[in-house]
Image (cartoon, rainbow over the protein chains, first blue to last red):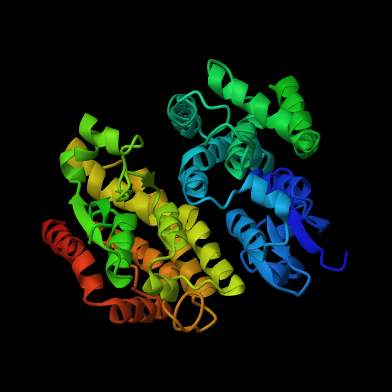
Length: 230
Length: 230
């Protein structure tokens, strides 16, 4: 176990959860380094020395190599080539990989941007500022999130595959599911009225458990708390 | 030339320009298929059959394989492995590639989101709707764009390298430059007050010309027109 990778993460962050799951599922030797975003631990000078972008997730490899951006980290781990279980989740076949990459690139300004913005406006910002975000901004963000979730339902999942890019679970599903889960903390239920998305999320959970539940444990508690207060 | 790739693009789109440049620089056999976004050509049923996401850029390979998302397309072309000049722009070395990927993943919700949103609000939407975007939205977008351009200047370019990830031009520079150029069409000069960014853009242009100027010819004309009208 001398070749462990240090993973800096917070399970409040969608791509942190995705990488946390991948390290577990692909059996990559890891040292967990939680970074408490709610305590603004990412903004300390100590953390800036680890990641100049002051964000999670990021890694420091056993040889000291530092990297941020979850999908860049995924590709780096894959290219290192020591992890056969990772290859199952991110197959090397030219066309299969291209379709997975297509989703991973799409999600940034697709499901990530819109579910993440809604979460920011309705959950995180009010915690920071002590007051609710402007109603017009929340309304616009909600509409855009609904549009993108409908696009997930009708286009990405509309061809009836079990998973996003075919019949097998891949990293695309892991990244996608972690994003779609995010607005649940802010009291929004992405599965409502979206039977394909509901079925897909359950399949992702089943295919990855127990690590799916472990990664989303904090989120479930936050979801309950938000519901009881709103 | 039987193995040409059809590239669907509009030089008004940042990632279209990046891929247009890469096909040229890496000498990849290509059939140019311009798609006029201003005429909403991407929304026709004919184009939907080519790309279900109804966006540019996208490709159809010589064997009929369809793919969208510029960075997924870049990786697909790279993995095909027939293009040695592409390897110069996107080296296979584990750490070098990881740092390039770090930028390519960062830019989506970094320089792409904020420069692209400003362009949408100030240039494209007024053309579509016939009236200016709400001043408060423009102001907020401008502030966010300025923050992200300052981050390019101080963090990405702050270590004094000639290019974004070192002393050699890579695809990171090509994607980055195409995004930073975008708000110029909307009358915003990203180089003003950012000497490192100004120097870097000039280096990217020099290292890639004549294709840089070819890719940005329409943008330059739009920039002049916008200035003369505002």
